[in-house]
Each structure stands twice: as C-alpha cells, then as structure tokens.
Length: 344
Length: 254
Image 1 (cartoon, each protein chain N blue to C red):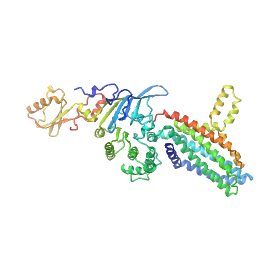
Image 2: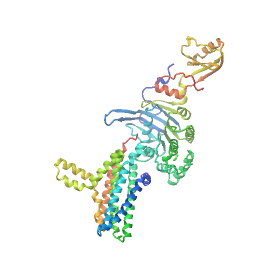
Image 3: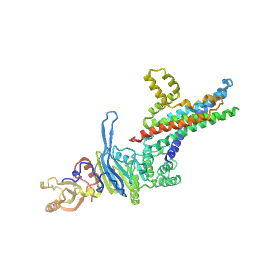
Image 4: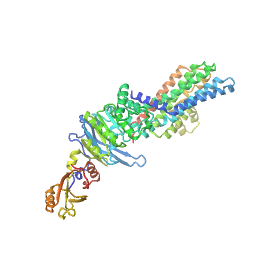
C-alpha cells in the first residue's frame, strides 16, 4: 500500500488554508511567510540552509508540536521567531506583531533548549529579573517568582545559587521563567529534555494547564509520546522545509491500518502464499499472532483461519504510533509492521 | 527601563565577582603600603599618596574592565544566558547600554571607594585639605574608565574575550599616547602620516581625563575642562555604543 506520507508534497507547505501571500491574519498566534535562514561561511563563502521558505500558521489557543530530526531546522525556526536569529528572507509575526519589533515578545514565554542562567543569582532573584524584563512591576515579579518557584518544585531551595542547580532544576526554572508573566504564547524548545519521568509529567501537566488557560503553545520535542498526548496539531520539518502539518488524529487516520489476529491451537500453521507478505506470523508462548497489513482482506484471512480449525481469541485493529509515522516520514518510507504495537 | 534592569543585574554580577572585591582590596593595601613609604618622600608624602592613589584607580579600574568587561557580552553568548534575555521584549541596543551602564557603575564604585580611602588616609595624617582637587581627579578618572568600558563592551559584543581584551588594551594605550602619536605622525612619510593621524583621532583622548599632576599639588581644574571632559566622554561612549549596537543588531546567537 502506498502511504499517504510517501505522497507528501516535496515543496514547502503552508500550514493554514486561509493564508496566502504576505497577508497577515491577526487571529493567528504565530504566522510565518517564506521564512528562510541561510548561513554563509565567512571564509569559504559556502552557503548552507537552516530553514527554507517556511510558511506556518499556529492558531490562537492551540498546542502545536514541532517535529523533525536533528538538524532539520526546528531550533533555527524557533530562534528566528523569538528574535535570536535574523531571517535571511521572509517575514513572521507573533500575536499579530512583526518579530522585528521587540513588542512582539511582550506576551511571549520562551524556553531555550538546555537553558542556562546567571549562576550568581538565586532562583527567586532570577525569576524576579525575568518577570521585570517581561513588564511586571518589582513587587509583583517578586511575588510571582516565589509562587512559580514552588509551582515547579524548587520552593525548598530559595537561597541556592543557580550554579548549584542540576540540569533538571535549571529546566524547571526555565519553565517558571517562561510562564511568570502569564504569556499568551509559549515557545518551548525541547521542554522535556534533561527531565526525569516525574519532571516530564510535571511539564506535561503545565502545558495542559496552559492549554486550558487558552495559551498557545508551540514546542519542539523528540519525545513523541508526549507530543501525541499534548498536541492539537503537529508540524513535521525535514531538511529545513515544512513537509507536513496535520492533527495527530489526521496523521494516524491517514496511515495504513493493521490488524492483529491472536489465535491458539495451531502452533505450526503457516500463512498461504496467496497472502504474499501481507500477513506476518509471530509466535508467542501459548498463541500464534498474525499481523494483517491490508484491512480489506480481513474476511478472507478470518475465513482461512476458521477453515484450519484455529481458535480465534482476538481481532484487534492496530494504529501506527506518531513515532513510527515520524520515522517513516523522516526516512521517506512507509511505516513497517512491528511485532508489538499499541492497540487502537 | 529594561536598560536599567540589565544595568542593575550587571552591577550585581560585577560586585558578586571576586575580581571587583579583589581589586578594591588590592587598591587599599597599595595605599597603605604607600603610607609606609611617605617618610622617604622628603616632605612630598601627600603628593606621593595622591599621585599613586589616582594611578591605582586608573590601573585597577582598567584591570576590572579588561577582566570583566571584555567577556561581559561574549560570555553571555557563549553560555547562552543571553537567550533568556533577548527573547523578552528588549531591544538589543538597550541590552548593550544596560551592560555598559552596569559595569561602568562597578568601576565608578572602585574609583569612589579608593578615593574615599585616600582622603581618609590623608585626613588621618592631617593632610586632608585639597579634597576638591581629589574629587575632580576621581571624577575624571571615572569618566576615563567609562570610555574604556564602552570600548570593552563593543569589542565583547563582536569578538572573543581574549581578542576583546587585546583590542581594548590597544585602544587604551593608543588613547593614552594619542598626543605623542600625532607628534610622531608629523615625522612619518605622507601615507603613514595620514594613517597615524586617523588612528590618533579615532582613539579616545585619554589625556583629557588626566589631572593627576594638578591634584597631587592640591590644585583644581576649571569648570570648562570638566564640562568638556564630560561632554567628550558622553559623545565618545554614545558613538562607540551606537557602533556596537549597529553591529550587534544583525548578530545571530547559536
């Protein structure tokens, strides 16, 4: 079967049907048009591509996952959005304001990948500074800093200097600093990296809480189960270009469905040649499992199994995980059947 | 407002750094050592104290600028602490101005502490007169250090800490001898003469801020000199920071 991913457009992809040209839709939280970042080596003058012609729309209030292998251009894109990189071409707006204008970052919370902070400050001092730089008054920034420090589980160390913080503690502090001024837009670069399972759970809960508040969240991650849980839509970036943008449900729905048939009483049963690779056989203790790649042939396979006297114990539709879809997209291939898959 | 916040944080960074405390302590120890040597000065003890004390302010201030200032922005870029700042509603020029103001505040603190220590030592020895000339000389030394700090911040924003330190030191040396450079230029062949004059004109006119000779004799300078020095320092710092901001504006942070 030809995968829908294999039919993806090869050229950059616009993530929002209503947007065209350089028109700005002010209802969008993030809007990019033809955003391009090229790097020129000053010695060899060789040009390398960071991001090319990226047009992406993120709706207000949605949580969007930004996926791609290392070097795909995710961090470059996020850095351009928050003003750390200057685009070579193209334009972008945050909450309706052009990214060249520092005011576009008034309602923005940003967490960089592997955040580092002033190691001579304590957690409350840093959060107070972060809050004030985002427009809060000194008193309010101090109060919110204390509250957020407790909220991210660092309240027990108010006087500890940041040079003594662990990587996970710095990540938590970075999240608190990104959220201290109640931003309308959160851009998080690998927010789960460096966190233990408890930390990941806490960050997931924070993101879900922000979604409940109506905050727009755009985040990149390699931890795809988290993306699957949190995101309304995912954008897949490959080699500096946007290759696909869709809801997680849409991505999964478009992928081929597989069906797992568990049966017993036929330990030596082999699939006939007529199924020609569309039916894989796995042996487990006390049962035999067949994985059917083509849903349309289910009746045919069940008929054959019943005719052999097999005791059919379960017929379970399988869906491809986001991780498999992502890997297949990155490799330009259809997802392969795995022996173990998550049930639908 | 953002520049003030960044300045305050930079000041806090500099004052929590051991360099600033160490330099201040070294300056005070130096002043005490000078007191021990004053009997050898044949009645010129006051002159020796003021002259060496003011020199200590300039040299130790310069050391702080070289050790802290030249890595001020470069270190932030290298450690990526700048990401969390510039992703907030802060214009890049405001960031540089804040960095400069914070460090300039720190070197002014050294200058004031050492000047007060000097005045106290002189007063203890019954030579506390001439406070006005000491005040003026300290003010001019502070202006000189502010100009050097602006250069250090500019180089730090555009280069590595080591190169920034070399460039800053180079500018300081050329600035100190800019009059001599102009005089030498007259002896050079025409092509070299032009280059030397350009260099002398671009370098900060640091002798303008030097009134150690007057202060050690207990003499004051004119208000016009002070106003000219203030105006020159403000203009020079403004130009240097504007250049730095223009180059920093297009910089990418990896």
